[in-house]
Length: 272
Length: 125
Image (tube, rainbow over all chains, first blue to last red; front, side, top):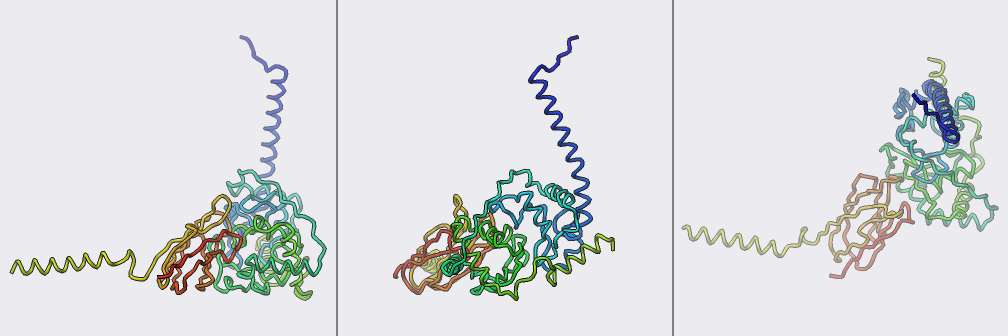
């Protein structure tokens, strides 16, 4: 009987393919159980064992935990409707969502946070889709009176007061009627006169919220409607609405949902 | 006797037919219109884009938001008739008003003014 052996380039390709397959299997094998373990220990209490947002603590929270099975993320650096990048997910896990029970997970190591990001992507079949590259935020312009006046004009012309109110306090006509998110849960427009906002206090993050929208909420993407310079004028105008006494330090928990979220996570972690 | 009854029935039927021919599709002076918000090649738009009514008619718009992409709410506004409705995805709304002035009026999304605008044409009687 004659044995057929792969020859030359063909053999190298087969061996290379096998090696890659083994590497991927080993990576997945190492990542999934550990990522799942981190998730179950630190995240499932709010987001639920299946990731559907129905964890045992969800009923105690005003802002309901995200449904991670939907694959719809508010805080992205990618266009509206697209999946977030790994860096986006890592950032949300690390820095949390301000004003909500999703507190910064800095008690986890960087490696643990990366593992849980890998696990999050297994909770929604949407992650089989390709993730577009992150949109680059252009550099901020210098603040001038003209720029702020332009930002104020953009604010009015873009319909922002309908939800956020004339003064940016989140009390526009639509807000007073009561608004709903894509899960039909009540949602309140951001009070833009205090910081941090959900995404933090960095102007670059507010630029992303306006340009890319917050998927699953009434906040649309303005990428097609406004040019990047108009968005910067708007961001810096909004910054000018925040008095010093309404700027909470980034590194301290906000009273209310953040403190509650921290307590829930600690109790769950310590098995109480 | 039979002849008299036949005449009465015939008279009543004729009257009903006459009324049916005179009456418009809806009740007198009322007009019901449907507007659907869709995404057309990247643009959100209320469709159809133009609606025509007569001055003095009571207009009832039934509004449907069928845009699958986020955000989950769009606006339907006609400033001159104080119409301003937030229409959530797959949650139809109804708005009524009397078209008490003639002209061409902009229909727009007050939440996201960049969306394509439509128009309401109110004809003189």
